[in-house]
Length: 174
Image 1 (tube, rainbow, N blue to C red):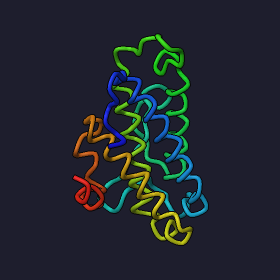
Image 2: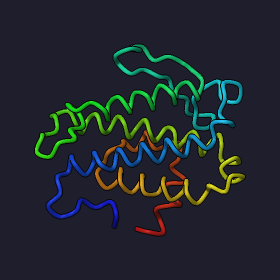
Image 3: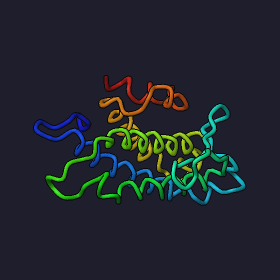
């Protein structure tokens, strides 16, 4: 399976490489539906009627704020890019060790990226179908879910907005 840690590979390195890949994929996928995700159409960052997300990065915005989905996703993508660009968190040189808090930071990044998938599936699936991107979105999300489940990187409760889809996508392959 494509998500299993390759023999001899460092777990942190494997999680780092895949986190960067997922960030790039979700950034690209979201980029295709930005015309449909506007301040007007999405005044709140949500994943269906039961799940609403408020933004806080712990540095610039310490207290979670309610904001539109495009604003939230912009904050999120900027924050993730800043984490990925931080050499102390994501060292790019061979032999430079990962920090002790690396896995915790990676889990936060992946949890937040999941929210973008959840928002796209719940709020913008029709445009995804119109753009004929359904297979690409499903493949990307399926890989993401298998990966985070393999290494227990996102708490089950956080996955609740897409639990039905997750079961559907993963049941055939287990």
